[in-house]
Length: 235
Image 1 (tube, rainbow, N blue to C red):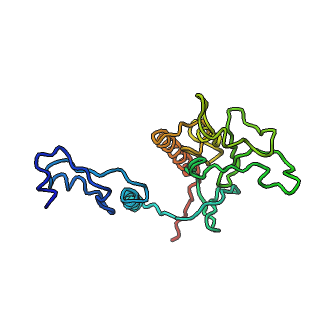
Image 2: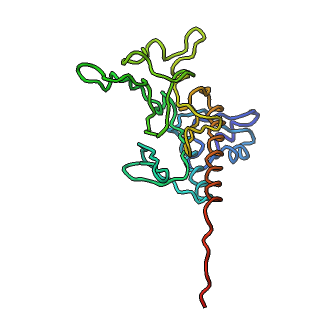
Image 3: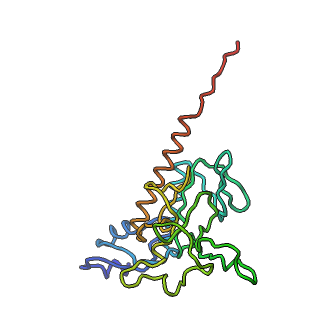
């Protein structure tokens, strides 16, 4: 009631991040107040994130999609693709990696020196890897994929952030993918985990849609190639 009284003559009302957890209330309040009502931006762990989770759950329920929550450690390729999460294996037709990059933990800084003994590492390997073990993944920081001459990896204090017009490792480190986000057969990647992608929300959404469409097309082609079982009538 107090908001209704104070809203007379106002162009808009800005509230804190309080407009509902299960469903958005901005339109309902706007109609009652007589002026647009919105809320300030909040952290993903706040009301906005809770509303997103509720909306996602409703959408997946309508589509008949089951949601499995767990930390994925590996994608394996045998006769079919499998996702390993929490010690359980889930057979899948396609995989889309949307794990984030260096900031989100999808790309891990792990130079050979970190795994070396008292005498150092015995091998020279790339200093970055995927946070999830994926067959065929090639993580790089440059268009010319390869390994450095040092087992200690790049000096992050000097190369992590952009400097003098040069991209930093936060913007460059990623897994090599094709135009549709294809990493290898049946495995796709999107967003900040990919090499060469702009680290923006819109770029991540666009690459996610492209990878999702490619994964769906693969599933459709696999279904189309499955032999149709012949049945015989028995009288």
